[in-house]
View 1: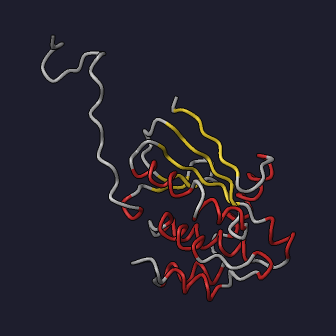
View 2: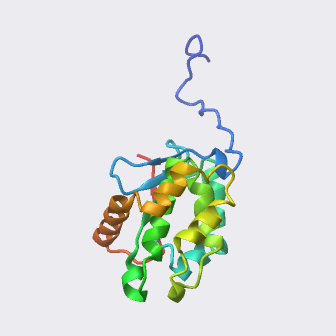
View 3: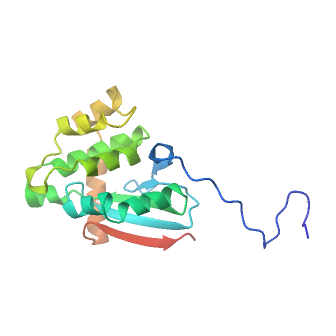
Length: 190
């Protein structure tokens, strides 16, 4: 029985939305907290929050051969949305500044609408943790693997550490959360 012109009854499910065509099609934004990068359908029934340090080899394992590929598939199918909080504590622990430079570059990629694609590239080409290999030159070279990412704004942001304040805020948010990397928490949509 219909409840009226164009209206749904409480029993009728919402129509299923089509999956996103790939990482380039995923919506991505900076959350209002200023430290979390959000990828996927804002109305997804489940949110997965990840804590990662770009230099962390266990994070790379998760992203490349562990649960990361399945999580990205769920996000593309609109079954989850994924939130990222980035740490950079390995710079202090192992020496160098590669984590901070990589987090800054990821934030610059978000500004260009290319975060999800660049994030995947960084983990596929992660240098050894002890090497501090995320140099400015490598970050720019890897950005060349993402169609449309390289350009004056992105390159300048990477070279000048434009998003240093974001890097610092994100590390503080990670510290407050008291997590290790990688860590993942799932919660249903409310």
